[in-house]
Length: 220
Image (tube, rainbow, N blue to C red; front, side):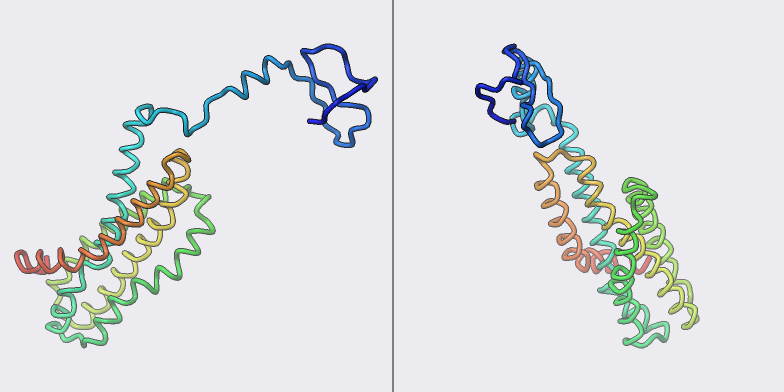
């Protein structure tokens, strides 16, 4: 807006604002002051009471806390017992280490790819596909205990680990735009913090959970 004083092109109507003839910006504005006052008086997001977000806020927190936690858990749960089981099948410790280490390598490759093309399927579909892929790969991984042939065991271990890592990459890539689309600015930083902390907790507790389950239930 420009301040208008003693301009012949300015109307005398106090209810409208029109631009002066000498203004270089090619903007035509004619807005009643009553409408402007009503727009300026709209409440900001920070002034909306917390209770109005209630259920939506809590559901977002739950979704973005549980999903990264389970994703981190799936990555690290094999660490305590896979090497032991693999060596009993004839796999060397080095080969077992490569199977476990391939997860991070695959994520490095696929996270940029999913990040570039995630708008085509959408963050929601990418999120669901990632979760389902991780779950299916981990369930199939447990069936490897019945395979005694070393080469078959090693090959399927690598394949299922790659598939699980692709699912992890899809999950982690979809979370950030998914948060932006489903969470208001007021709570976005909190949800992102909870999401990052949950993934770290999952990675940390995964070996302990895996060791406990292996102790009581075995590989399967």
